[in-house]
Image 1 (cartoon, rainbow, N blue to C red):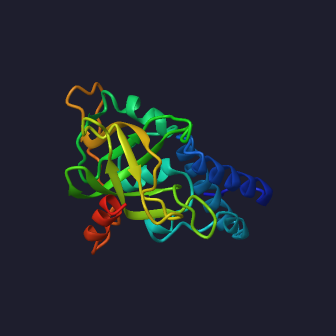
Image 2 (spheres, rainbow, N blue to C red):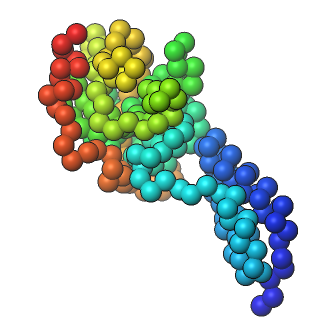
Length: 227
C-alpha cells in the first residue's frame, strides 16, 4: 500500500496542537493523539522523521510531571474525569462512588474559592490517622520558583468542625508546613463505580507511584500538631 507524504509543516503543527490539548486536559486530545500517531507513521514511512522531534518526550515517572493538577490526578488515581477541578465532584455523581471519608486512591475534590478559583484535586496516598492523611498531587508548591511540579506523600489535615473533611490544610513547600490557610472541599471521589451508574464505568487503578516506599508518618504528625 502506498502512503501519501504528509508535509512536515502540517505534522509539526498537528504535534503542537496535540501537546496543547493535553496540557488543557481536553478530551479531544485523544482523537488528536490518534491523528498524530498516524501522521508520524506515514511520515516515517516516507523517510521524514524530523517531525517527531516536535513532540517532547513523555516523563518516565509520574513524579517527573509538570503541569496542571487535573491531568496528574487522573493519571495518579485512574479516575477518568475531565474538566476544571471544581467540577469533578458533580461530574462524579452517577459515575463513581463519593463520600466524606478518605481512602487510598480516592481523589479529594477541592471547592472553588478565592484562593482556588478553579478548585484543586489531590489523590490520597496514605492514611495517617483519623484526621490526617498524605496526598500526592501537582501544581501546588513552588519548586525552584515554579509551580506545576508533582509532590508525593505530603500532609493533608482535616480542620473541619464536624470532622467531615469539608475544610482542610495542605502542606506547602515554601513554608515547610501547613501554615494558616484553609481550603473548602466537597469530599472524596472513590475509584469504585457508582452502583446506580447508567453507563458502564471501569474501576479505577491508581498508579504504582502514588506513594513512596517509606512515607514519613512521624513527619506528617509533626507537620500537623507541632505548630
